[in-house]
Each structure stands twice: as C-alpha cells, then as structure tokens.
Length: 125
Image 1 (cartoon, rainbow, N blue to C red):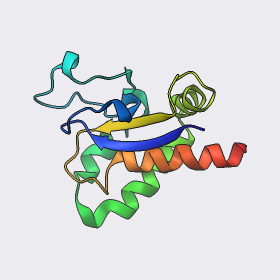
Image 2 (image 1 turned 180 degrees about the horizontal axis):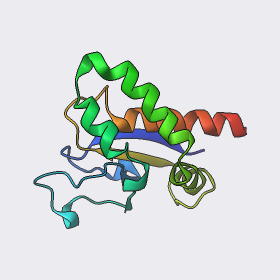
Image 3 (image 1 turned 120 degrees about the vertical axis):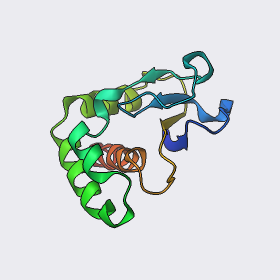
Image 4 (image 1 turned 180 degrees about the vertical axis):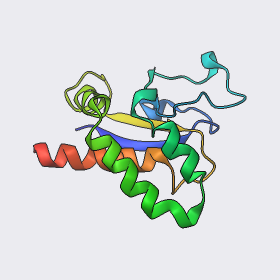
C-alpha cells in the first residue's frame, strides 16, 4: 500500500520520502535541479496560473482555493494519470512525497492534491 506525504522542497531530502514528485507549476527559487532528488516534476497537476495568482497564499481565500482547485483536478487528465502512476505500482516505493515550494505547510496545493489522490484511491477500493 502506497502512502502519500507532502513536504516543502526547502526541507532536506530524506530516503524515507520515497519517490519525490514536485507538484508546482513554477520551479522553486534557489533550488538546483540536481539537488532536489525528484522522481519527477508534474507541473500539469498544479493549480492553473489564474487560480494560483488569485489565491496568492492568502489564508482567508483557502476554502475557496481548495474548492476551485479540486474542481480543476476533477477535470484534469494529468491528475488521473498521476493517481494511476502512484497506485498502480509504477513507483517501486511504499511512499510518495508530493513536494511543493509554498511556505504554509497546511494550506497549499500539495495538501489538496494529496487529499484528492487519497480519496480517489479509496473510491477505487
């Protein structure tokens, strides 16, 4: 059974992270690609540029951001492909860590995406 975690890209990579997948549309500032220890960079599952700009990591907008982003994920074939990649054993690890650049560890796109993927996995079970 694969578990899904989230982690800020600025935190030190750990072998316990398993397969690290960057889920931001933009590359994080100050991070060298060879030091990120990523299995992949899946920018197609990130929030649209319009939604990302609208949200601007403003805490009062979080509930609406979450609702809108879930709507985008439900209509996004890349999200279904990522779910299949994770849960159909493409990754040879028991853990996948969705990596993000935002400062807020509780209110960011990786948290919404992880919940979305976990829910879709439960729906399939």
